[in-house]
Length: 451
Image 1 (cartoon, rainbow, N blue to C red):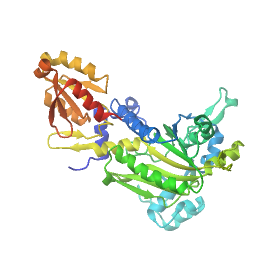
Image 2: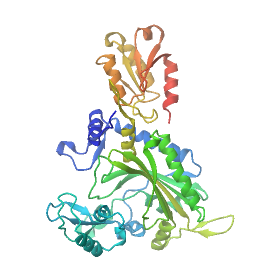
Image 3: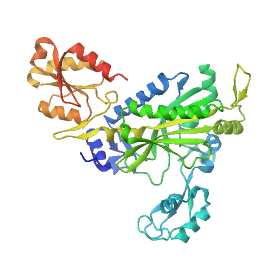
Image 4: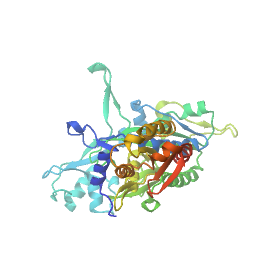
């Protein structure tokens, strides 16, 4: 089977209700996407699997839900106001806007552009006559710094308005609540704070469907630990992240670690887990040793002590932080690519059963004779797991539709069901069938699909 293209997957996702273009009736808003009737369920199942793996199964792990809008000083302390911008220039010939650092590094991979000033980058581009990736001319404007944070204002009158930001990452919500969680959980180091939520970046070159967007969702996990134990925690969460990818069913052959050659201003160590998309390897997880950078800066700016008191030794110190962050939208995209299969006579989406938006579909063999019993069984099944019922079209066509949207179990209601309450279960991945009692079928599916 040839691998599905990004365009084909986008069409598939729209056709079957996984992902729609944002604001489509108005022509769409570039790089915004709405999760549809199946996509929303898939997304929620992924989040629930993450919660089980990172909160429920971990000791001293707690979940919060911090505000999207935060005090502007949060972003001053984090370094985003000073450092969170892209050096952009425009091609004077075709008007294409590009990042200067990316332009240089794609031209010469031995150059580390983020160590150069804007003036040095401009001079390098002119001296080497680096061409525009679109029209191949080498005629650019001066570099302008483009802030990646979305700004908004707070206040009811023009004179009283103040600038605040849509958060560019979730992590700071965990950091500013470090003391609150420490106090209310009555916990000790090491402990972790997790959070799932939206973040926003005013990216100039988003693309590749849902891989890079201006609004996205993160599953964040921050572990607070003592210095000198930080690298052990870092190594653990690198490995734990890969185990999570396998837990949700991603193909190990399409996953790899990618250590960072260039570290962010806050990082001591950093590594990504990448998935092999049609466009190449792309990051779906990042694990970082952020040292005590964040808490130290928040302490300095807020004048509130972020020190942890070890009651056994009496020692006080600012904890180090190991961050492991997971892109919800990127992982969903990887899952769809991974699960999509074109077989000789059908499309089948072989999603992990726990992730499948709909667990079972009840299908009366002949509507005229079996619909009433099918509805009775459907009402019983849906109390236990997400269930659909479909009675139009031939049974073969209904099987194929269920296969295409990833329903792991198709439940056929026929004359035998009317006689003895036995149903025929058809298994999505193999198309094999098995007869079971109704209560037995419920128990079987519930056990297989429980998160």
